[in-house]
Image (cartoon, rainbow, N blue to C red; front, side):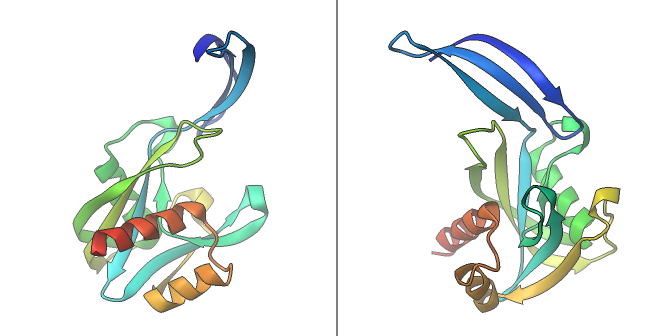
Length: 175
């Protein structure tokens, strides 16, 4: 597929949206709307048989969601994924990892977004104060047992696709 032209149609501090005109291999023309966001990091805080989750209001779906701590650098900046993971963990939960291990990478929504995410396992955790951004002031955090996490996933209480995919990477890592 060949990109014929590209134009930015929207931008804010977290993302840009562009529209690309393309030519497919068979010669037909088309368009793609693409959400560009910087690299993200997701962190699985694990202490024995407990997982630490955050809950926050997710405006696009109009509901609060439990998920693993995750995020991007401010102002669409690119940041080293390991540094980003450590920052997000401390910012959202107040936890600091003595050990941080890369479990894998995810394409978050490849049908509409260029964003990629690095998934880290955080262990040897110590607790400090959370350093939340202004937009995260309503965030709640809580430890869950692995059994509770899996029950929440089965029962539709935990539906964040990134967290569920990251949990699969954790299970594959443990084998």
